[in-house]
Image: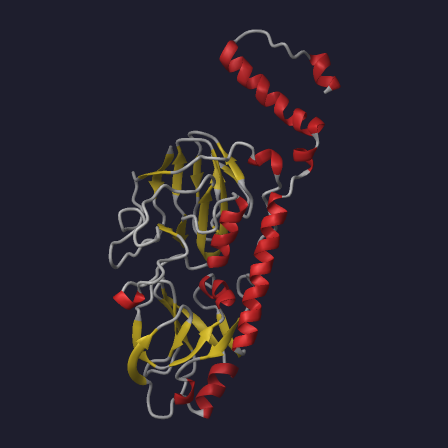
Amino acid sequence: MGIVVKKPGVATTVQDRGRVGYMGSGFSPSGVMDRRAFLIANTLVENDLDACVLEYALVGPTVRFTMPTFIALTGGDFAPKLDGKEIPLYTAIPVKRGSVLSMGSSRCGVYGYLAIAGGSLNVKPIMGSRSTNLKCELGGWKGRTLEAGDYIPFQTKGVEFMSNLGSHRIPNDPIYPPPGHEVTLRVVPGPQYDMFSIEGKHTFFNDRFTTTVKCDRMGYRLDGPQIQTVHGSDIISDGIAFGAVQVPAHGRPIIMLADRQTTGGYAKIGTIVSVDIPKLVQSRPGTSIRFAPVTVHEAQTSYRDEATYLHNLAKSVRRPCADGISPRRTARRLMPILEQQAKESQHESLWINSSEKERA
C-alpha cells in the first residue's frame, strides 16, 4: 500500500511542520515552505494537521498509487492530471488502485503539496519530525529528494466514507495574489533594527525589491536598492527565526526560510509576519516585493485570524453535504457502484431491476 515514483519532479521531498527544539544543536528545522497550503491539504483529507506530505517545486512528480485512497493538492498549480484527466486543486479527490497522478511545470506559484488521506505517508519520524533535512541527509525518505522507482508506503485507515459525508473542497486560496502582481509583506522590526540608518529604514519600507533566481529552501535573495547601515552589518552571530530579513554588506535583503542556518552574523532589519511567508515563497523570480511595518501585537492578531480561518475551514470541510445527509441521493450514487461490484464478483443476474431503480 503506497506510491511508486515514476518521475520525481524537482526537489520533491517528504515534509511536515518541521523539527522543533534542535536548533541549539545545529539542526535547522526544515519543514514545509508554505505552511498554509500544507495545513489546508491535510484538512481537506481529514489528516492530523502535522501529517507529512510531499512538497515539490517548479515541476511536480508523477506517481502511481497501489491502493485506493483520497488525495488533496494545494499550493502552486502544476496542471495535475489523474489517469490523463485534469483534476482541481483544493479538493479531496478519490484515487483508484493503479491510478497515475501526473504533474508538469508550475503554471503559477512555486511550491506544491500532495496530502494522502488516512495519516499520509508511512515514514519513520526522526527527532520528532518526518521532515527531510537535505544537508544532513536526515529524515523524510532516506534523507534525500525522491528518485524514480522509489516506493513509499502510506496508511489507508478511516478513508472509506469521505466521498459521502462532506464536501471536502474549497475555492482556490485567496491569499495568493495573481501572477505578476506586487506582493506586500508585513514586517516586525528586528533585533538589529537600530543598526540601520534613517535612510536605510526608509529605503526598506518605501522602495520596491524583486525576487531573483537565487531562491531556495534556505532563503530568498532579493534585488533592489542598497539598504544603508550606520556602521556596517556584521554582528556577533545569533539565532535566526523563520522569516528573518538579513542584510549583508552588499545591502540587499535575504529572507531566511525553512532550511536556514541556525545562526548568522549579519544584522536583521526585521522578521516577516509568519502568515505572509506563503505569499513570498509562492512568488516566482521577478515578482515585485514591498515591505510594510507592523507591531508585534498586529502580527499576533493576524496569526490568530488565520488560526480562526483554518478552524472554520475544517468545520466547513467536514460538514455533511447534501449527498451525505439525503438517503435517497446517497442511494442513487451507490446504485451503479454496487451493480458494478456485483457483476465483477458474481457474473450473474442482479436482484436490482430497472423498475426498482426508478423508484429509488
